[in-house]
Image (tube, rainbow, N blue to C red):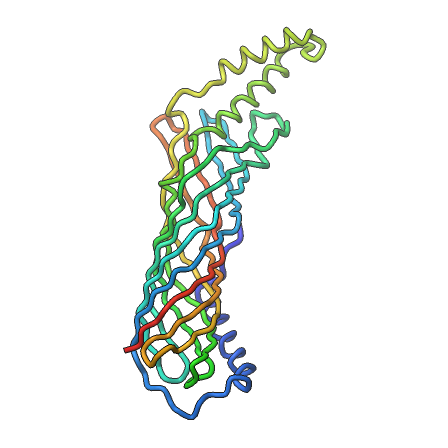
Length: 296
């Protein structure tokens, strides 16, 4: 899994990028002679959210047998609602505190690269798990923005932010234990073929009977596989830019793009019979937003 850089490194990159871009863009967007005064503002934005396919790894132990599998989660387009309070400092910089809620439907879950000791090195096909329901985000960030063209109605801006987000998969509906049952079935087939002398030379009907018997014994009782925890809270960051238009002295409309990414998510589960499961996943996406700010 890719991990986001250290907190200090992210801050340095955001501010260095902001300063560097300001140097190159300032000659194009020459500030008006009027100086802006420091002012407070509140705002609201409603972005359309597109989450990238997220890579994850699921691993666990079922009755002492260890297994692992890579997985890809796919999402439908989602939305995000953000509210913010900020301070304009009169020199182009804005400091902002943002709270947000976001939601995107999980549309597909595919397991690949499945490994288990019981498979005896045999490769098995990818496993598609029927899945539906929303993956939610609830979080807060501290953002720093730089507005170019101070004093003009048209004001491009760039910046970024850092904060925390709670990712909630509790609303996602899927068959718990589907991966583990598939593994048990495949292991049973491999075991039956390995333990039956001259299996490949037996009549097809006999082979089918042997495999059917092995599959019947491989059925996992309800509750064998524990549920994964539904939420995890992690560090997140975003960078982006956009264009604001000062409709009045108090109201600014804006359109922007932001890229965001979280630190690695981790969900775990265990039960009374000693079985365990763990899933780690990344989460990143793209926001195309329209919003409004009201300046006091």
